[in-house]
Image 1 (tube, rainbow, N blue to C red):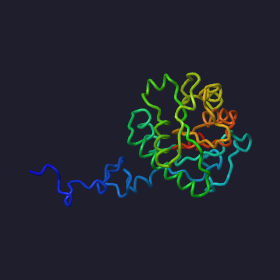
Image 2 (image 1 turned 135 degrees about the vertical axis):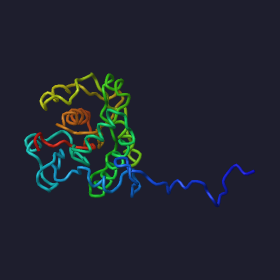
Image 3 (image 1 turned 60 degrees about the vertical axis):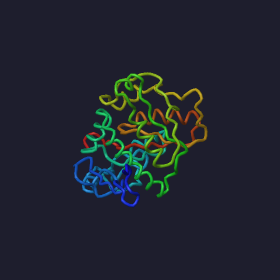
Image 4 (image 1 turned 180 degrees about the vertical axis):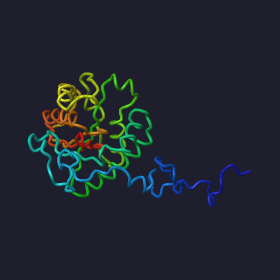
Length: 246
């Protein structure tokens, strides 16, 4: 009696397994768990500030918003795939607060494709990827750091090294969601620090997070890294929020 299938008649052909779209449950017509119709409906980032990726009403990608002109940030450039809008906001919430990791992996794969295109268009590849760290209290509550998970997926798909524990939260801070821009900046003063053996002098670093809202977190981390000698700091995130009312 044969307990193994014949080699010339395999039971499973894994590479031909049909993918199901995670959004509509219909068969996917591509390699990812997302059909082309649902992918087209995502709020892809159109015209935006060339520094902070703030959505702008004009289609150009080479404009700079007023805030970046008045006070250039410590980071060089933000790369985001989408505006923080429906249905993407719901997908990120389900990944971040309901631990629906397949949705996060899907969004991470799409962000990887966006970054690969940006690299082919001239965006310099960083030396190292760094996730924005969570406070110990929030990490215990949530059970995982969504930025760290995104960083691991990007590191694997983009073949870039990561340093998951180079950045640390020096203290617990209040949740940022309900704070104004000024309050967010005050809330994050002295909130981050480098690991004792952290060396970033002369390196091009990319911070990874899920959503960029006011940019206060990215600014605080970039200032710390620049002060420690980093040559350049970029920000990679899934989505960028528009101005209130836009």
